[in-house]
Amino acid sequence: MDLRSEKSVSDAIKYRRSVRVFKNEAIDEQKVKDCIHLATLAATSSNMQLWEFYHIVSPDIIKQIAVASFDQNGAKTAQQLLVVVVRKDLWRKRMKSNIAFLKSQFGNKPETEYSKREKFALNYYKKIIPTIYTDFFGILGTIKFLAFYIIGIFKPIYRQVSQSDMRIVAHKSAGLAAQNFMISMAALNYDTCPMEGFDSIRIKKILQLPASVEINMIIGCGLRDEEGVYGERFRIPFEEVYFKI
Image 1 (cartoon, rainbow, N blue to C red):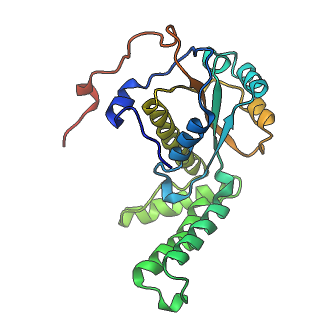
Image 2 (cartoon, rainbow, N blue to C red):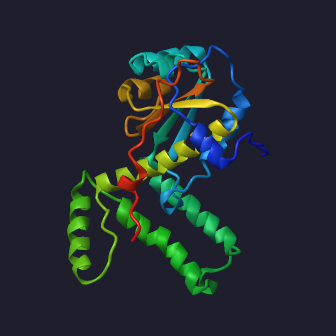
Image 3 (cartoon, rainbow, N blue to C red):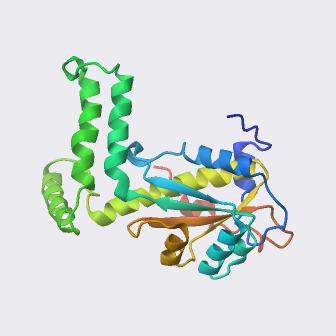
């Protein structure tokens, strides 16, 4: 895929703004799809890729989603939408995909011939991933938290093992992918508006998604209107957030 950006990464980051009003002007569907493909190259926890991306181009569906998003201008004026969905429920499927990929990289040889590094990589997905992702109504998560806390008294150990912890992990990965998408769009002089204000139950019904999934964000896409950016960018002074140790 050849996406020749008109902006450098730094310029794209500076150009990107949350655009609240888009022009009534079409944008290239394929270019947006290419940017979604770039989103899938984002860093993701344990390479689990617990996400899905719904590229909305139907005017009727856009209108329905806009209503479920409280008629925000960033949704109802968008030419296209991207709904970023978290699929923590697919961890077993993604785990198996990673195992199959690793085996193909190792040459599909008998496991007795695996090197120490190769065994470690496979065991990570066969043992550690099920340990941290398996839960039962939060009960196992509490047990794991207590067990890992006790072990942590004696040595460093991973502590984010509860059901809520893994939910946060999945959302962080989805957020990284969404940022990849928005920067890629900015590089092409396309604009975006990430939105968290929406009725998630209605959105899932519109897209016919399982009740167990979660919506990470909805991103409006288009070309910024002259009044689409509501003011100058404000950021806390860098000295307040930067610490050199």
